[in-house]
Length: 386
Ligand SMILES: Cc1cc2nc3c(=O)[nH]c(=O)nc-3n(C[C@H](O)[C@H](O)[C@H](O)COP(=O)(O)OP(=O)(O)OC[C@H]3O[C@@H](n4cnc5c(N)ncnc54)[C@H](O)[C@@H]3O)c2cc1C
Image (cartoon, rainbow, N blue to C red; front, top):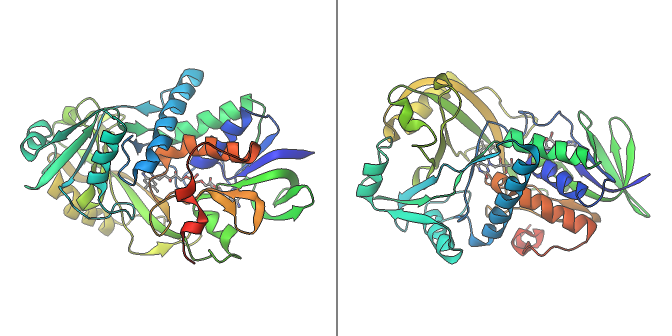
């Protein structure tokens, strides 16, 4: 038997791809070395920010808009809530050039993208920011962009929903099966796993931080860098109601590399606040998955206490995750440089989840129709010097 396509890696990108493939043909297989959704890759921690005016570049906006439509379609099919549109507050200094996801000018690009695509938003001067959002301690020169339909996705639920829908459409899903290698054959690709071998016309590698393995024998072997990131949930000590989704938006403090979410769940569950860190590269095999008390204390003292009112030092939960970065913060969506029937679609440079539903559609179209109407030129390997 020859599959039309095999997807290796069923995290954000792979589950979306398998779902989109299964809408075209049931003759597809998805493999993951673990049992997704799991906590060992890049797609765990209860929440991911989603927004439509994309400060990393306006060419991401069509991906975000298409993803919004797919999440809604999936909610209708499954009866599950995947997205909460509680609004998004993005704050920084006017004309700041601080980088976010390796991209300068996050706030100004966001505002331009909102204007270009008519995305509902408000611009907030410093006084309005302080009046409307007393949960924050803003800097005197902060200004804000508030996006009405921004919010957060539940990443674990999105993965499960897409894998379940794919299975219902006839796709085969195999967990706890690891691809060891693949070889080219006369009519496609042979995938070798720890369990067996499978023939396919197209192979799609959505292996997240493990994707570097697939580029090891190419000139791009050193292109991608994996960074350890920590998500913290801190206790809300005062005015819990002010941190509920109806009063507290998702936020990005772009000049401080911080982002976070409202209180989701019960009052003891805290709110998730994180800071992007790029000090040290790592790998899925060598990453330190333990969050030390010293790290937590430093996060509270340097990031939480100076920026919020009412959040206490008690850390309710923490989770280690990985960013897989390209040098310029764009994605990588392209054919493997040495294998024309193999597609690669990681890295997502720390901002991929919100676009993952559309990336799945793109990969399915490339695999089956060998074309897509989305502009994926910015995500091509040829953009990067080796
Ligand atoms: C802390 C953190 C916060 C983030 N916040 C946001 C946010 O707010 N908004 C946003 O849009 N994005 C955000 N992102 C980015 C987003 O979550 C990621 O871009 C996205 O989840 C990456 O998904 P992926 O499918 O590429 O990787 P993964 O989810 O890691 O999936 C890769 C899968 O491949 C499997 N695999 C690997 N190798 C093999 C093999 N050989 N055989 C079989 N299976 C294999 C793995 O087991 C894994 O399941 C965040 C990321 C992190 C880490």
